[in-house]
Length: 339
Image 1: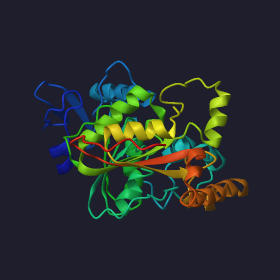
Image 2: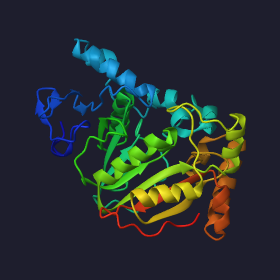
Image 3: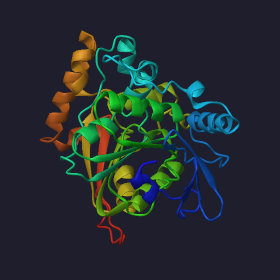
Image 4: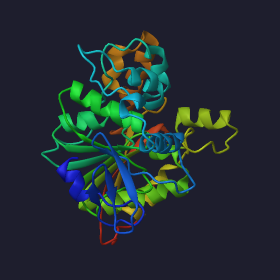
């Protein structure tokens, strides 16, 4: 197992230090976690899984513990000759958004997005909800020492295959955003895209608290969230009768003021900026992959995003927002901005 992980992992139940014994990590209270082909699976059954991935991964671990060979659980071979990993083809619209149903079986390259962060310069970044490494791999390529965490063992194994296929070696572990299995202050940056929005607001705030704990004082937290007043978001809420959906599958909507209030309370100084319009997960880097109609959506979103920097009220109807916070460990946060 990677040396940095061994030194900085902590028990997700009690945050105690862990010892590696064979293919298990354990703490002083004898909480044990299996290491699958070098990847720690830091999940436990707390009785309230937020996603089916958690249950699936725990069941898979139980089968491995019972003697099932890892090779029979998931194909660990790296893809050769630039072939798109089958896992990405399957998961594409669920990790990238509804626009991507149109190209699910037509990918000619991996749809890696633009990471709107400065060059990493060797800073340690945690990508929360990494799935197949869609954001983790660009972070590593941009100079961060990236660590991806996701509750799906299959996704994390795929992420490692795809990272190697693209010539980088970020670290990956299996874990729950509500119980980040790391020592306090071991990251410079926490990043999460299209993940916290799928948690109910209680669990979302628990996850934000965990981000604050594992990010250094004066470190950065960057999270994408949906805007309750966004044009497309209002359409989806109306379709559901403005009722809350199912955690892990549906989106939970927040107002801009509610987001600023919550992030300022958890971290400190927070800026709200526009990610995209007309949906969630609209990425300008993927315009070449899309059919003509979808290209028009992407270009229109980008035009409005550029306009929002000159005309701030546009942010109030953007569908997807970025919250960028400075983590103040002393909790002497500034006054909550109005939004």
